[in-house]
Length: 198
Image 1: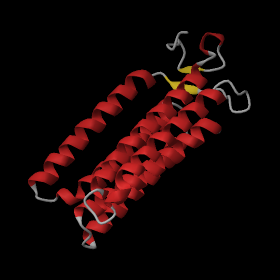
Image 2: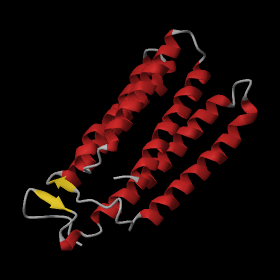
Image 3: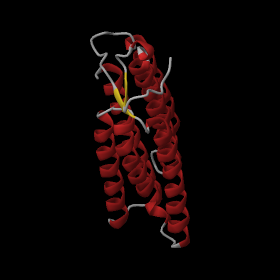
Image 4: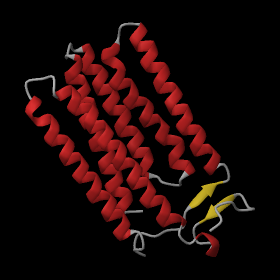
């Protein structure tokens, strides 16, 4: 299968790219699900320092099970003609995805370092959620996956809500748990939609 194409768009209907749509959907669900588990671990580490610490490990177990269920669903539905569609990708999509992900990591590191030096570590989970959310906007175009715009909106709202919790005087671990679990739910919801709708 050739992902490069001499014209301006790569088309999943092209005989040389018949599995492009299926592959991008399955990989998308896998990545969304894995990072939802990462957010769950972040949340659980915050929860473990609160009065609700007994729920920390069970939530991670549930998170892993949800992720596995979504990945299995995506794989089973991969060849479903009902959700298959022509996928149009910009010529820059392959290089662009790498650049977006590298940019995301750089901005997250800058935010973490900057907030730490300013003694504002409580805002780190919120800032990370916002950055991760914003990185989905160019990915929505790169992968021709409109759902990612909703993912971006949800994560940015989660980040803003987390910042609001800090301003309201919530403890750092509470903010960490709230932002972590809300971000995980947003990613799972997006993964479920990508797996079952197109």
